[in-house]
Figure 1 (spheres, rainbow, N blue to C red):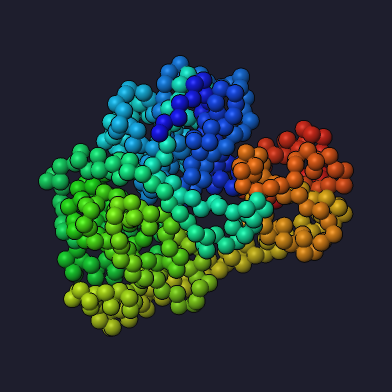
Figure 2: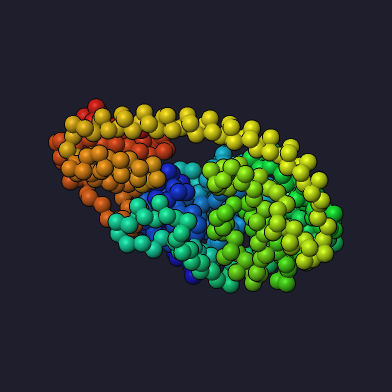
Length: 473
C-alpha cells in the first residue's frame, strides 16, 4: 500500500515529545494535518506535527518517495529504518528518496547505509536528507512492512506503561515485503569473492569504548570449536551478506550483531548469547519473520547482584562462560576451557569489573545528590501555589508527579506533553488553555531536550505568564 500526498510538507525530526522517543516530524497534507501513515510504529516511535515558519519553507516541484526517519546505526537501520524500502524494488523510478536524518550530520551518513540503498537501486545522489521543512509537489509514502504494536493502553494509563514497560506484551505485524528487501540484497552478492565458513561467530572485541568485559574468552571457545571469528564493523555490506548467507551456524552476542540474521539462509542455526536478563525486543520478531528459531544462552555474570550492571544494553556487562554455555558445549561435543583457565580470566575481569562499577557508583551517587537537591527545590517552589502544570512525559516527570501528589495531596496537578498531536493519541489530559488561565499556578518544564525547553518557555511567556512562575529543570 502506498499513500499519495499532493502538495504535502515534510517536517524534519525534532525532539519536543517525550512520548515519541525518536522525536516528531513526518508529513503534513495540503491542509496542514499530520498524515498518520508517515509516522513510525516500530519499537521506537516517531511522528507528529509541530509549528514552523511557513515563509521559510523550501519547495520541491517534483515527486519524492518518503521512507521515514533514518538512523545511522546498523542494528536500528536493519530492524526499523528499512521497513519502507520494499517500494524501491517494486517500482523502478528516478524519484529521489526523502528521509529525516537522525543523530548524524547532514551529508555524513555511513557508507554501509548508502551501500544498502545502492544495492536497492538508489545511488547516493538520489538520497534527500530533509533538515528544513520542505513542501513537495507529490509525496509517495510506502506503508511499513514491519510494525510493532506495544502501545495498547487506556487513556490515563501511560504512568503504568512507563513504569512497567518491560512487562508489556509486544506484538509484531509484518508482511512478505520485509523479507524481500534482504533477499534482493543477497542476490546482488557473489559469495565466491569473499571468505566464508559453515560456522561463524560475530565478535565485538575489536570495538572500543564499551563497558563489556570477558568476551575474549567467549570468542576463544568458538574459535577453538571451528568457528570463523568475524569483526563485522571491519567488513563491507557485501562481505557480511556473503558470510551470513554461506554459513550454517551463526553465533553472536544479542543486539545489533544478532540482527544480521536477516541476511541468512532459511535453514540456519542461530546461537544468541544473552548478556542481560531482559530480552531484546527487536530480535524475536526478526527471527519469526525469517522463519528461524534461535537458541538463547545466558552468559551474563552479576557478582554483586542485580544492581550492576544496571544500565541495560549501555550498562556494565561481564560476559562469562557459565553453566548454560558449558552445558551447550557438552551437548554438542565442543571444547570448553578448564576451571584453572576460567579462574585466571575471572580474577583479571573481576578487577576490571570493580573498577568500572566504582566509576558507575560515583556517577550514581552524584546523580542521587542532584536529584535530592532538585526534589527540595521543586517542593519549595510549588508550596505556595494551588495549581501546578507539569510539561513532559517521561520517567523523571512521573517521579515529580508522584512526589508532589504525596507531599501536597490537596493541590491540583495538570500533566501534559508539548506535542499536542502525540498526547491526543495516547493520554487524556487537561487542556492547555484551561491550565494557562489560572492565576494561582506554577509551571514545571521537565523536558530533556534544551531546544524544546526554550520553545515551551517562549510559548508560555508569549501567553503572558510571568517568568518567575516557570521552572526549568
